[in-house]
Image (cartoon, rainbow, N blue to C red):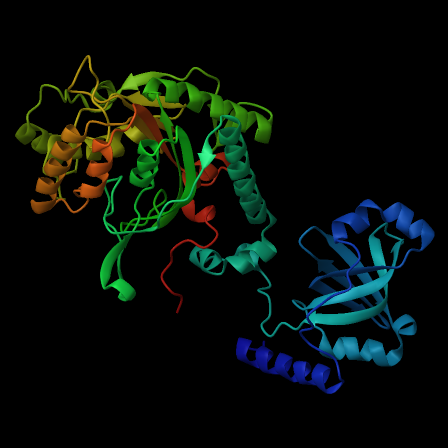
Length: 488
């Protein structure tokens, strides 16, 4: 069996043959008149009229029978069989095709449609043209590839051979389109905010750092969309949203990728309870438009999005699955309990961080049906407003489905004095070694001092939502080019 290098050398020779014959191997244009999907849709009429059409696509397979050759040709819309016959295209042309064209090449075909004796819809080729000569062979058994990482690393090959993968990414686009349409109808304004920021904020995460040479300025890739969107509330916008990339310098696993897509929106004069109602409405609308029903399958289990969804306080969830009473337990006792549960190797320095680690390991995976986990203890989210009736808890929720934390949302803290105090507490944690602590943002505090209306804010991981709705186990399955180590 020939090696890749040998095959490439052979194809380079074929490339020279094409060029020597006076043909372009990579022409700038094609005279395609129909996509394959449209040719098949109008097949009966075109075949009856013997209408000459021009198709273009990639050769996926080739079968020779004496003076005839059958090809499977595929474009982005579908696949069709092509029939080349020596006595139709001429002996010289037929030989040129066999000597110069390979599986993987992009070609243009001119001809008429007919059905073979086996009923296969086919284009009988009168003329052909090279559109792009492939120098490397397509993997013959991509479906059976055992190195899954290679599929993600070379997604372009994965898409060529795996129709289900392609459908997932078409579904991803449809999901984002429907979310935009929903928010637009709810009169939210789509905006764009900076990706490069002098101070990172809006979440607990380690950032990626870079440097702007023109201004000799250290900058960070944003870890969240939050703080700039809230500045727009100060500026007078009442409903704003952004769908954009965020970047966090953290571990990679089935639910995390260093760069990921977030939806965040902010709604003036609303609170987290209003957000829960809007979230239920958004999911009902989204699922009905995409699936025409509210029930889906995920990892062989049913999920029913029929509303209203349960609302359970964080303390209750933690106590239910771990017997830990967070309100009564002190820090040292909690640390010991965490160590018994195999948690505590990191340097978590307060109760909320330890409780969050326990929750994510022992509680989150057990929540399958859509559930609002509400009213986390104060300290969890430095940008969230505390409940007026119970200052020890926050006015917030997280939406959990099938063990995925999909949404984080809360009534926004708009008291600049309290916000400064929260940032100072976070700075202290950072100094004590908690690298993911949020940092002081003086410009944001100044913006709050000009006055921000009461508001609710919502953040959702688009990749996690797409993974859930496409029955995908890992984010890498729904991110076209996930972060990977370079291949050898």
